[in-house]
Length: 153
Ligand code: IDP
Ligand code: MG
Image (tube, rainbow, N blue to C red; front, side, top):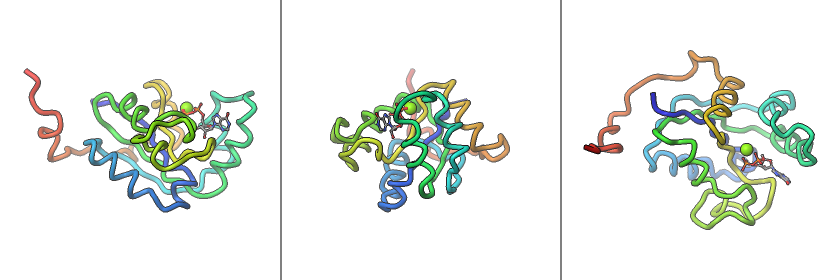
């Protein structure tokens, strides 16, 4: 099975109405959407998602931001997607992110950086399970997969 990652369009992305532009980049890259939920992440879920940041000074502000307005929570699949998407997101703060990345093209601040992407396969497994039951992830063939991955031999 191809690799999966949790991608969230955070409250600033929804409020700034750029979800379509962000999703276009994922589709253009050939990623496959296998799950999606539009929801208001509450404080409890936000604390669970960001449990790795427990004790850090920015956690309370981060939880306040994430639980301030709805988010679009998605699971996408592709070979190597975790690393590819981390590169597509850019550095954590928009003010440091390279132009051409999502954060570098859509933001110039710090905490408000539009997107979340899992940082390892272990994180992806843990984070996906916070938002989705296994039967909420849809299995299907992408009809153009052959034209995305091609033949490598
Ligand atoms: P990442 O989203 O690039 O993986 P993390 O270090 O996992 O970055 O931090 C999670 C989120 O917390 C960031 O995306 C950002 O919204 C916020 N954040 C991280 N560090 C800071 C900080 O020093 N000040 C304010 N917000 C921060
Ligand atoms: Mg992170």
